[in-house]
Length: 263
Image (cartoon, rainbow, N blue to C red; front, side, top):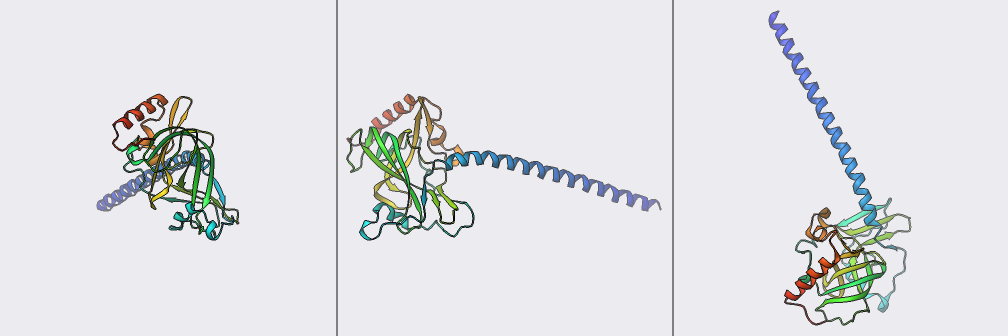
């Protein structure tokens, strides 16, 4: 009889421990889920601000045929990322390792470095409607570097491209396509741009690809892109610093560079 009491006592203890552990585990998961929801809410605000910088193009837009096709759009035919039969608004992100070797001043990877104001931003479909890209018309204020074959002077205009944009389908639903960590420059704002002819997924082209840049506003520097969630050096090194610091560092780096040709 005594042994039975001991056995039942042990069983009761095990049950109590099990209940306590289970309750603690449930509480832990509950707290974890709450924190995730809070993080998601915070990220949604940032995502919304980023999305607002992306131009929109209608999928039903009639593309020119034959010899009138925009040659810039043809290089984007290769990869299909747009699917018009979507049943809700969606996002599609292409994780391209574009920032891996970039420094805060990527002049060695840039054929052109300019200071200029964005005066127009438009999204375009590839000629086969497989994908979308955005094009920026930039009014040049100053040319810091031009090692390309393109000739222009200060005060003129130049166009640059970046993969991504928002596509509105006939159903009314939209797809937001972007490269992870890349943000689109805004119309009317001034930037220091680093441009290259080397498109990450398409090789060397005569067109210009927007590698990265810095918005210059109220005497301060605001990085255009946020790779790694803002942890990469191009997202944080000059963030909040005075514009004069960025431009002085750029000038010093250009003087030491071995591949800067006359403008």
